[in-house]
Length: 308
Image 1 (cartoon, rainbow, N blue to C red):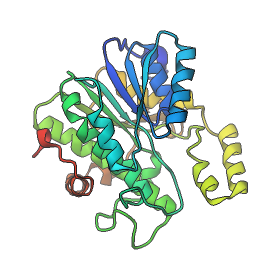
Image 2: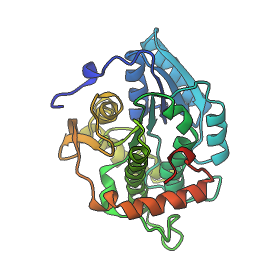
Image 3: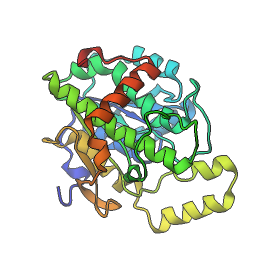
């Protein structure tokens, strides 16, 4: 693992991958490097225009790439169902649940869920469940859920998943990232209980320079905060290419353990992929099961093949 980089990605020929939020940042890099190694990659993007631009850019960089655009809005359960229903392949080898929002002012999704919980966790929970038959049809399929070191700021509140009692943007973000890890934990547990070879793993990019950090200040019209974010991205953060490495490692490296958490090796901030610390509450079986049951009810999506 020390020094692991994109040259170490195994051949992906014949594999099908879906990467959410693949029009920019670590999602784009992840999609590009999977395609470079021979995978057929679906870039699942909310904006059709930005998604098409990303596909065009990727094809310009890699003329041989087998890539296509899939319209997916993780804040809209109808869009998620439409994407899954229209998924054109019988098998899915790699699903990277990457797209997300961070520290936004309070808002709700199309279905009335708090946006960070609704997009970061619930949308990916629904997507993964709806694509489960295709995942189980692929030997050794991987589900990689992108969390964050910021999950350590807060555990979920199972009685207030939508932050209706009190909304604090960074706490809500941390809770959504904890939910990502609890989802991974429970998915791995269920996959093992059913004797499948599906591998559910989590990863995080450390502090990577993407447009994720500036979304909140832009939404609130805070230009000074936006400028500070852009300066920090230039001076402190590692580039998106480096931030994508833990995600690519979790998605492709042989022997990745179910429910592992991979991140940058230097203080969970930057550097080559390595096992990452995670808060003990993200390994709590009872919490994972409660969140799973609540998520199935809220999203209207059941994992029938992994029912326990």
